Length: 429
Image (cartoon, rainbow, N blue to C red; front, side):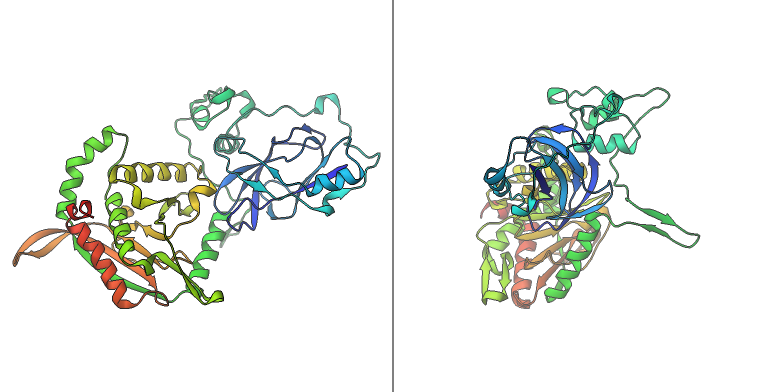
């Protein structure tokens, strides 16, 4: 039986993916669950495993090519399957577990239907010379494979130190080929197509950039943006952070101001549920979220990604700091999974970390609001009727004015400011 395996929707409304690397060649025997191809989607880079064992007889798509969900990836010859059994085989839904530590192919994948069956014939895989026999692929993480490719290294010559001898990012960084020294390696996304003239240079859009463009436009077209700007004096918060910074570091947590802001925002969301909701016009109703999943916008070399801290209301400041550090590291190493990215109910964006003061953040549609955090500025303030030197944190709150009235938006941000100016009050809630 010939079996056509189509590119599956691995979650979150995936529409397409770009081929980064093929792990198989025509004529190669494969096992069920074996990695076929490394794909970049709009959220993650992941391996796609084979749902069946057999022999590869056709490969669809080249490195750098974009494949739509539902389009063929490979054709597999499965021996000993005919007739009604073949029809049942094609309809089967298979549960596929992740095969690499950074892969995120999780849950149930719907396979192709009846149209994926081709009648059995005498045609088989093309014969190869002995010298052309496919070489077994070394075990390696997708990031390690991409780094090796960027550096023109033969990954099969690198000794892996990961589980089962798997080649990791650190192995690539530490590898010293003859007459070549690698001091530091960072995975950088390479455009599939680059074309230059004297006047301009054209580069193909990455999946991440295409998704950012689509989502930003979708948000502006489908929400009624309104933005409020405020300033809060946070000298007490600065003192508390300085006091506990070292003790958090001893527990492998980097204490920034963001965990406190997350905590303050969650407490405010509990009192203003319309900020933790979305509008469902198709069914003439509001959807109020009973969980507080805080999405954190993170700047990476490949573009903006927004992982989610699940059930942030149940976490302490220490736990929030640890989770933020974990998600930031995964984002920069391109190891975020679909589970890391979904179900956000409200978003924070910290442009102040790279020097910005004010902005008008674009709502992460279909959420009701997004809070922008600016850079702390030292400036004169009035305290107890006297002029003093203050540490002022600028805040920008964008809301969907269809959901949130101006008065509630002001009360919401004022409550956050109250918590940040008096951090101890957060502990009393």
